[in-house]
Image (cartoon, rainbow, N blue to C red; front, side):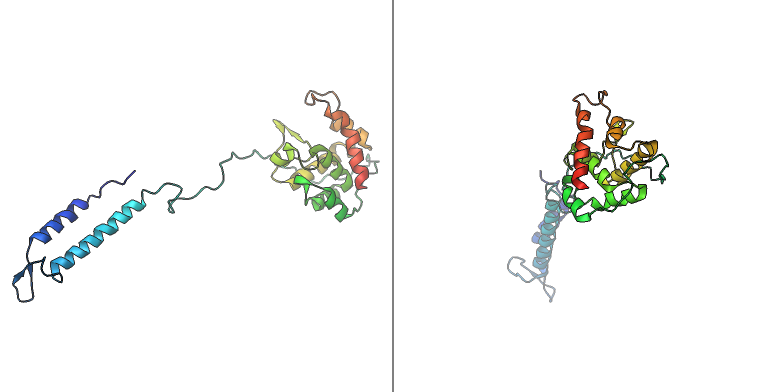
Length: 238
């Protein structure tokens, strides 16, 4: 689509016609033929007028560039996506209760071994598991084992789309987190407060509450494999 004709175009054309029709004056005050004298003032005027009109045309043409080629318009290189509804993470310290008689208190782990065991979206999260374990007095191997089992070692939609490493639920289904780190710390807080401090001292006892068998939100029966799967990952990391 071409740009509209400038309102000054008629003015320029009128001035050009008048300049060609009028005789120019030389330094002695006598009229000369503008066509026969390329160096006179009218010829210079025509040259300047032509340049002005040419520049005006270029300027108008620049505004008719396609959106993708117009350098004056911002470019959008990525598709528009709706924001994820991220819920706030409870970061309040939860002290260890005397009811915790488990063997899952914090203990040092081999960073390199843990780091090489984590894949997909969990890659590079070893220090987060260790730091969350220190904060809530939980063995990092237990935290990692649950996350590996819940996410298929970083491959599930929950962790890739919502940064949810532990299958944590909210009011409207799976919770969304700002980062994998936030999800790891929220999982550790939940385990300390609602499981270990409540006397759940084995993986089987944790699993009976964490992933109960026969619940409505587990129609395919995946919870049947929770205790065995987490135990296998825990033994591999320990």
